[in-house]
Length: 546
Image 1: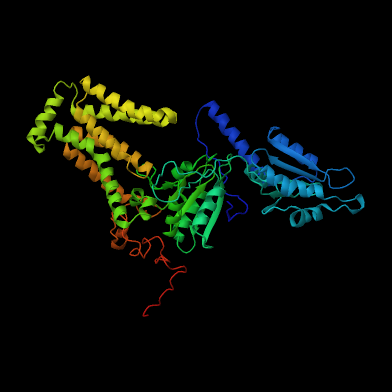
Image 2 (image 1 turned 90 degrees about the horizontal axis):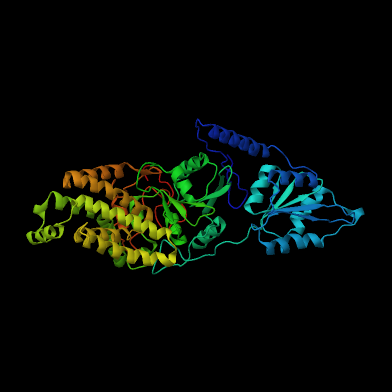
């Protein structure tokens, strides 16, 4: 495994994940993957040819004579012989930079036959005098060649030498910087990440203009060759967490990484827990805030979502906007989020338990009204709640998948029509419709979509427990959830910190958001070497007795 730091070469984890199955087709698939693996590993051992014609033939054979692979020949001498061959992928390079900084400077160079440069001299001159581009690097084998080519670099090959030059003219059509789609805010920056890892890393650097902000890079996915970066503030991030993260990324075995969700699922601590242990964010300011607390960001090329590790439960109730409002307003909003999460998780099951088993807890007048509403309803309370919850989940998924123009109409009209229709038909009681609707609204309050999904899944388990044992079933499931939460770790950090284990100093940024002038220290167990926010260098260690 090779790992590079900064903006340089990107070589990393290249392991193909396979599943052993018994079918003939699966065996053929495994053999094909093994052949590809051997072929790709052979690239690193096979040097480039000194003949441009042989190199071009080999590239065409390996890439199936794909039409988007462009070859541009340039003659630098009067002999008429091709001295330079430029290879690039159409649509992945910036055409303007390509013409201005590579092709035009090469066309201005002209050597008579008696002053023709040696290949190695020409290579050195190209890098030092002719190519007016920022990032150039040498290529010595075919593995490096295909990695750089498919990242959008322009490869310059010289006749008579087995080396090539990779020039960074990465470009092409990409989505511009827009407002985040999933993390809306009334106050704060309006910029969100894009699908380019380089653009995303630059957006973070604009927030933290410090040389202590370090970056390391992998290339993960044997076939997809996806750039994956980690960013952290040196001196703040825990070295043990960094080491653990590097080992997990090195151990990734997969053919391709298409989104950061692949990385999240492969490196997470709790693979069977409904609760997310790795946070994903779309806002550069949120990532910068977590980096300043000592956490690590994972950037994946091709997605606008950045992962944050380690992540704890309290982080999923926080929003970047909390730190742009006054502390009293932020505290009020956080408490609303916590209460809304409990409502989204427990309200349907509490209703079923009260109506089915604990009617004595309801005031008499309310009990009579509920009994009158339920008169003629053919289903028990728990089945009513199950039906309405399931219908609402179908409606929510339909709204997500439908075109945006029709989605809002369907969500509003569909909910009203279905709710009114089932009540008039006598299938469910009006109280169930109110409970399910209020639960659905409360589930949207959570800033983290992944935590909302966990509440939706657990809601059905709690409904089942309430339908069988009433409040005793709810209490049993809640107790099991608390035990589960206290046993979860995210890269060694307790998931329920700072509540369990209790850390008094860290409670300033949990249910309440204390004033910024009171939060002088970073969260414990994160920035161990640099606990005070104003410090730049780690505190000097004190000798015993001082």
